[in-house]
Length: 46
Image 1 (cartoon, one colour):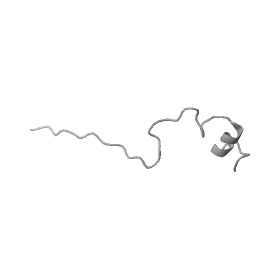
Image 2 (cartoon, rainbow, N blue to C red):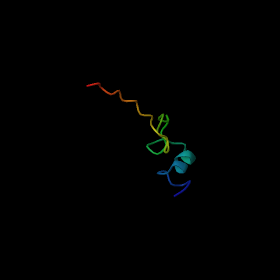
Image 3 (cartoon, rainbow, N blue to C red):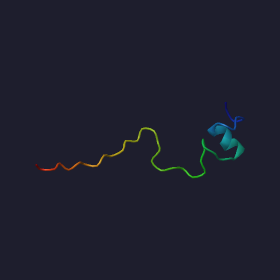
Image 4 (cartoon, rainbow, N blue to C red):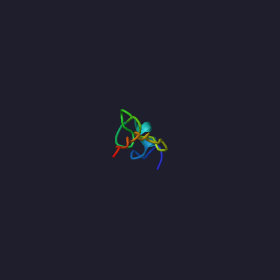
């Protein structure tokens, strides 16, 4: 796995191609380690 392997990100950069490993348009908010903010839940008065 490395520059010669077209199935890896490094290989796709070297070959100048795109695919599932290296999409042509980066998806927003897909980084590992990012935490989603939860919406506050309103409590219903009984």
